[in-house]
Amino acid sequence: MKLLLASVLLTCAALAQAAEVRFGQLYFFQPEDVLQAKQIKNDEIARYSNKVQSFIWKALKKANLDTASGYLVMAVRDDGKTAAWLDMEPVLSESVESDILTAAKKIQAFSVARGTVVFAIKMTLESPKWYDLQFNKVPPQQTTRQKPAPQAWDDVIKKIGNTDNIEDIVNAAWPEE
Image (cartoon, rainbow, N blue to C red; front, top):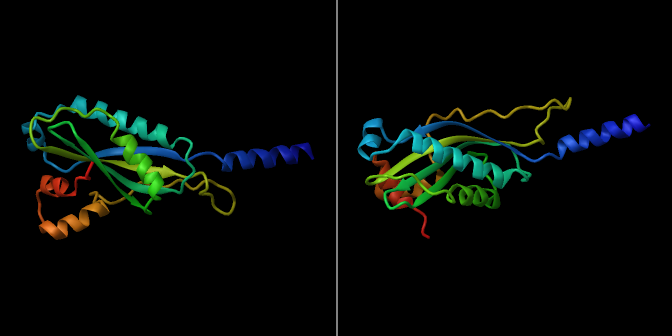
């Protein structure tokens, strides 16, 4: 009986764990020559990205949320201001989205000589709730979409026209402070 009770408790403990946040590759909206003209340093972007990931992980380490995958899109302006958007499937709750975006914007940005730098980080939220009928954990898959497209940008694109200039889109979609 004690062995059965211990098994049940271990199973419940495993199911009650918090979500796991996983990050993948970076996606740059601008070509390398544009980034070089903005005097962007790869090591600064790497450190910044790592800090963003760390802050998000800490913000969500005790969260209980559903599995989702997609992108965290970040923009850094030459005035040091940052903005962030999510492109996740399925769409996250407002509170979880707010926690992620708030954590992402807490970090001091890297320097940009002029204009805006826009990049995205692949992100997967793994819920401990995802098990098959035999209680085998079913790992979530990273998004297969090659290019992020945050929902918040759709209205802006319709308003300003279908533009290839990512800085125009980002500046028009920049959240008011």
